[in-house]
Figure 1 (cartoon, rainbow, N blue to C red):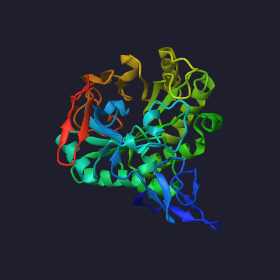
Figure 2: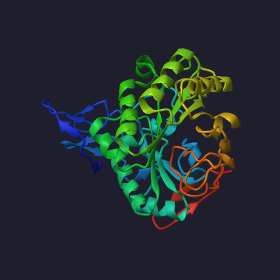
Figure 3: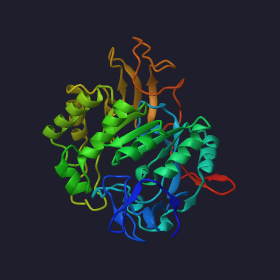
Length: 365
């Protein structure tokens, strides 16, 4: 085993080495891996064993991350590695995030190769997704820097489960994030995700008050587990009060997967109910996802209420913002990141394979 050097760890008096990237604080003896699988002890240090390797690349609409207020309509080069530092029983990317096989990592690419590929493919951004970039932060940071040199943004799709010092370094290199707030009780996090709620709330507060990173929140609603009116009321009140009313909040639908096959899919009405609760509690931009709901997927101006971005799935239709992201009807600025007219990528999904000497793309029907 050979891996890339990391710095967030320290030696313990009993001879073990503790990883300090996330609150799990894995304590490792020689040859052991952390719960995330990709950070391991090698000698007297923690190394990243998956630097430069990916489980696959795909060009997606940015709205799929989901980010509705970040460069609307543009394409993003998405990729992940293997492993995860949470153990969500409902994981919908479990074949990647729970992988314990390096065969999963079919594509190899340097940060510069990825930045060049994103530029060649016309992507406005690169997203670290499919599994959590927290666990491969050194690789993600190097890619973000290579992309930034070419005018390409970096997006983290994350559960936000990270310690303070690495979090500060990581987000200094990110332009946007979607944070998965999986529920709003410690019981849900402990029993369903093998984690803790407070660390995620700390990340959200940090992003809002100590960075310029644009971020949006996703809440996957699971019938009978985290979808009660009481929990949604408390969560949306907290978002509006602690983060502000202008932070977009996406409610998305669960489907049975991984170790949670005994729950039914989320009814569309549940997402609409959650959105209504959020709007009532002052969240200005609440969305529904994973269902066909043009009303719940579209954006209205918080100033005058006019429709400013009409969405159907990942397609943009009516668009009422100027190039600065201001409402054409009243002039109010829509919170987010906007750069000229909207993109026209649409719903397309284009898997790509990065080769050492060239980038080959193949369409998936």
